[in-house]
Length: 177
Image (cartoon, rainbow, N blue to C red; front, side):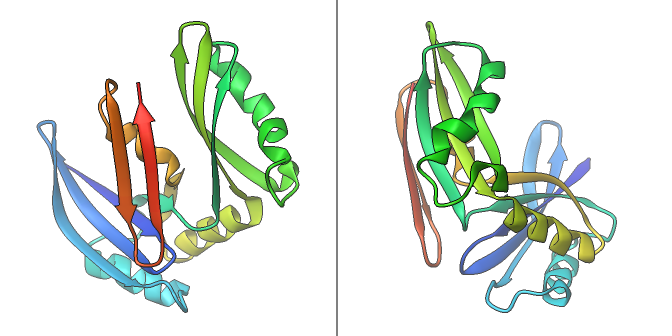
């Protein structure tokens, strides 16, 4: 049995979960949420304690607010070529200088091309999230820029609509093979 911990920093609420992974299945152990307005270290720490996330635990952090998302098709298959060109491809589209952003992407090779779902977030915003989680005594093991994670939620074949209904925003993606 392995326990997994995650928090989702949304625009309206902060959600936390403790999950149990056993014999290939994952089940919910405990969950909780608090309003994101006025979020500070003490309130986040209290949420994590009430959800059973112990101090020193590694936590996956999902961030949905303040994330820029864009999909691209590139004329090459090599995943290693994507990261160096994302700042140039997304730079003209964003109100922020590329060097002030952190990028994340999902890559899928199709024939001689690549399809990429990219996310970008201000470096200072990512740093403040990391600092906030660390101030609670937890370790932010992985940061996920949402909704860039949508592709991981659906089977690889077919056309799928993924809709996430938040408290103040709706994120939607149409994903096709």
